[in-house]
Image (cartoon, rainbow, N blue to C red; front, side, top):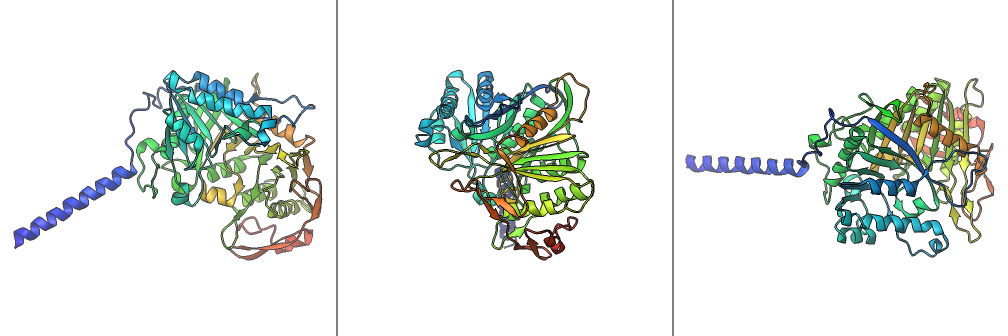
Length: 490
């Protein structure tokens, strides 16, 4: 009898051990070598270019600041590819039969890029795609043409969406920015991104972010144990020191949300916080949407970024400029929040906050084009460029990636630093004919049929961790707590 009980106990232990191993190896992918690239032998002397898409109906005639077209930059990356192309994109809509696009010659750029991707097979280049789009005709077509496509169900994993947009080519070139694999990013949207060439140290780290998404195919849970090959190589405390266009810089990659950040990976919120905290002179922000709310039921005030901006304004007297898109999907509460920020400086010396809205052009048929889809921040010390809008839900639930580049202002170099270039791009947009300044007690109506009208700013109440707060039109609303940045309430 005792012998039988021992056998049962041993069998149970063996089963438990087998189950434990299965769980561990289901959570940890044992990747092969990374093409022999290590932190010791990777390249740190890199070339960087800004890429952007400027829609045909937007013209900056008074400012000569211009960069490589996004479509040209992506084609250049594909021309350089000899072994692998790894892509993460929130959208796959390069080939469109949309009635709207038939009138736009620039829409052909999307089809041209799709054909180039389909042609990688003939060059014996391995195309790997990680996507949150479970149903996509384009991805199915690419899959049939020997692309490896992995689908990530972010809704199941984080209750969000996969918003990351980046490329890694041959583990030594990369792109990251606001533009995605959507014909509109190459035609009708205003996009900004960075391409870095011959930079295997950084590409290896971004490749690890790609591999994290890659291993999540069809997973219904987030692994509790990550492979060491997914750990971050660099972060906000241990940045990668390198040369960008022969100029000294420090750089690292960040990701969101927190549950998809393996060991040593800096979260996007931490990256944004560090850039804001280290700014001493100015903080210029260009963003599609600015909404410090978590849109759950009920809505909650999300103070993380909003509070950082308030501290920079009040405690350190840093000059802040906020450029927000004014388009069909702009949330009405956006204007209440930015006005609440603006009231902070009404009776404060050495406090400077300016807010403008980038208004897209309206066509004769009522369609709206030229949306400012940029998602970046530049200061006197650094630049942050990412994939997420500055909305509470984005950072809480959605998968995104960002990059921080530190370069001190006023470095004595022959060429402009990337920080200088992005600041010049912000200034070009800020002073352009397409921006409108936030007016006292009035907000622009961003509906495409009312693009030039103004509406009164109304006072509203929202719940916070400390009760209710007012967001309103008049300076008297400050008594409801608009100056309380330290505890996170409005």
